[in-house]
View 1 (cartoon, rainbow, N blue to C red):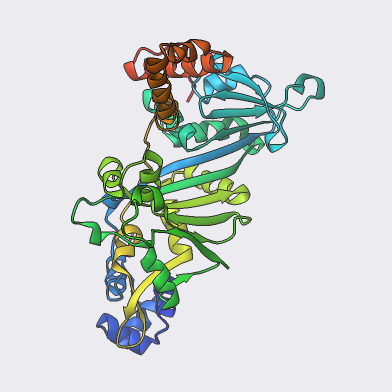
View 2: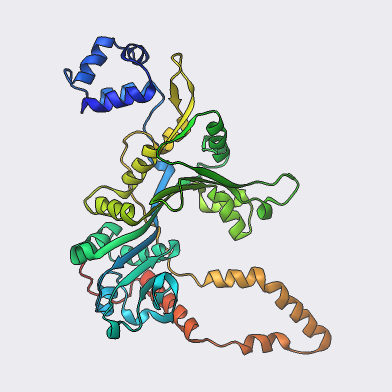
Length: 418
């Protein structure tokens, strides 16, 4: 192991060789030999030195890493049918056509939350640039297809890069890191974002190379109020939204509770998520991270490295006044234990629309039903029969049918080249 890593770590503790040696329990002469490269520094020894300052390996079972947003621009794609079949694993006929003004494009192809932007007049102008965009839901829908064919994100991105080379630019990549719930009565093991705020004011939170931070949200001031409705949780932002990398840490359990109209306790038991730590990358940073991933470095490892290179969390000091690493933070992001990207395939779900109707419309329909009973009319049936399945709805139902076929295992093989 290169001696510079030990020298850099010691400087990070702000200790001279003599005091550092006392902390790790060896002689100053030995530290000097390690730093000068006269004595070989093993990884095991380096870990022992770091352990003396509270650093430890993470608990890999506590985190789940996922791609949660992806946007890629291709300079020229003339055959969209080949592109969707080969790379997105979807027949082109399943995409619906829409007008748009987003991102300077004038046309959009949609299949659920998998979107392709292009130009409706491309044959006249010769501009064949396209941009594919996958929201969080789009990523989960893409993973349904990847899982069906036994593929990974690395396979998909690598094949795109092999075919399009420098004509492919990743302009946005979000990596979501979920801190998984450790179970009832184990809540004290989790990191509280409110503690990070307190640590900032005690100078125990250090975010290097990030000039700003902000936090939004919190709980209710009235303990008798319904937490299901009033609490949105804390969101912490590190860095600028205009920069090529910034972090958003937030209490996902509150967001899910509010979204599903359930209690936070129910949210934890159902979804098993405590906090979410999100890395948002754009332009050159996003493209370079994807290149690193294609070259074989797991995206989860890259994500941990990005967080550790920017944020340090401490808990008190030792006898020499050196900050000690925070134990809960180390359980999440510490050490060198290998981490791996996960997939959480979820097809497009029309139940989201059904859920919206249940929460937003069902009370009104119930009132109409009771009104019908009083006046002897049948307005409820009239309302239901007045609707029709339009072209957009037909496309949505086609998406549902296709994904249902995938789940049953009888989907056509598209002869993908990945």
